[in-house]
Length: 208
Ligand SMILES: Cc1cc2nc3c(=O)[nH]c(=O)nc-3n(C[C@H](O)[C@H](O)[C@H](O)COP(=O)(O)O)c2cc1C
Image (cartoon, rainbow, N blue to C red; front, side, top):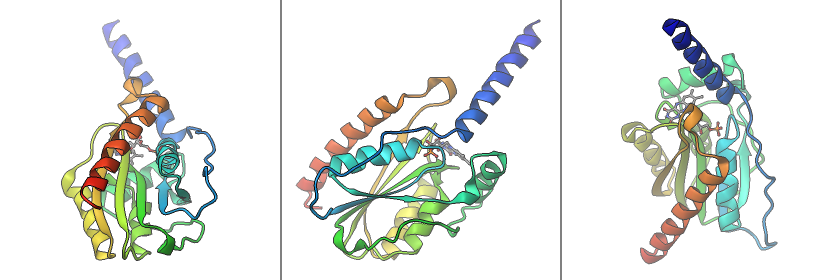
């Protein structure tokens, strides 16, 4: 009897985990509030929608342009999940990506938003950085994740940004929580808002 209950709990958890990794989470469409040329750009890769929701919150806060990266090889099925896992584990940085053309010249501040895959940003964001020059840009990384990131793996991303001439401001990890203990998108957005307000004040004080 007890082993039956344990098996049921395990199967339920596995099913729920699979669903969260393969189902797209919708968020409200984003539109800039002004018509002036944007000074801030938000670039996002999102496999299941959570990071896109966060990126829209950031874009809203800074009245930024938003560019979404597509990487269909990491499809929302078991095959895509396995490839995502393999590439992240092998610390792959170069992978095919698609997005609308970006001219970075007009932007002073660039947010790069990514899910966390094996404790580091997902490969599509590394590829975006490899493909661009960030001279005269301040760059900030935002990662969403269920549990944690690792400094030694994610730190290499900041090094890459600096190799591509960017002024790397650091990173923010948004912990959404696991399985049944996940924050709602509204709670996540509130966390993002508070963090951005603090960062913005800090950057203004330090003149960055
Ligand atoms: C292959 C793979 C590896 C993951 N590794 C981590 C991890 O190391 N740490 C973590 O907190 N979350 C990890 N996650 C969970 C995602 O980072 C998390 O669900 C994220 O918010 C999903 O963002 P998205 O909906 O924008 O794709 C992993 C997910 C996948 C698919």
